[in-house]
Amino acid sequence: MIHPDVKEVLLSAQQIEARVKELAAEISADYRGREPVLVGVLDGAVVFLSDLMRALTIPLRIDFVKWSSYGDARASSGEVQMLKDLSFSVEGKHILVVEDIVDTGLTLRYLLENLHTRDAESIAVAALLDKPSRRRVKVELDYVGFQVPDQFVVGYGLDFAQRYRNLPYVAVLKPEVYAKR
Ligand code: IMP
Image (cartoon, rainbow, N blue to C red):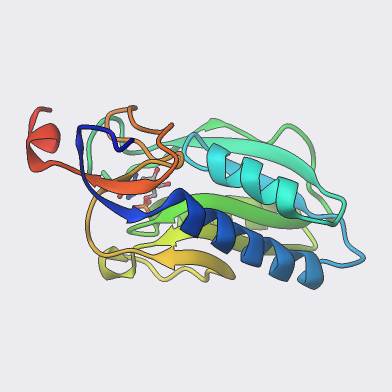
C-alpha cells in the first residue's frame, strides 16, 4: 500500500534491501580484521544503520551524533550545531559515518571536521543517498547506495517536517503536501 501523500516511489523496499546487502558485503570485505565504529547521524540514518549493521559480517560498535540545521525547513540554513556528541572515545578506532542523504554536504563537512580532531585511525563515509546536483562543499563518499535527482525525498528514515520516516521505500510527496507547510 502506497501512502496517499506519495506522488512517486523512487526506490522500492526491495531495491533498497538488495543495495544495502551489496554495500554490506563490500564494507565487510574492506574492514576484515578491523572493528569499525558505525557513527549514525540522527535522526535520518537510523533505518539505514539498523539494516546495514545487521547485514555486516564483521564485529562492530555503534554510536550516534545529532546535528541541528534544517529544523522543519527543506533547505539547509548553513548553520549547523551539535545536539548530541559521541558517547565514547574513538581515538585509534576506524570510524564509518552512516548518513541517510548527502545534499549540500554542509552537515557532513562539519561532522568530518569535528571527527578529524579526535585521533581516529581512519574515517570513511557510507551514505544511502547522494544528491550531487545540490552539493555546495566537496565531501568524499566512500560508499553510496543510490544517487537521487534534485527532489526532496522521504521515507526509509528521511522526513518531511518529521513525518514519513517510517515509509519502507524512498518517495517524493505530492506538491500540495509540501505546500501545506
Ligand atoms: P546537507 O547538509 O545539505 O548535506 O543535508 C544533510 C541532511 O539534510 C540529511 O542528513 C537530511 O537529514 C537532510 N536532507 C537533505 N535532503 C533531504 C531530502 O531530500 N529529504 C529529507 N531530508 C533531506
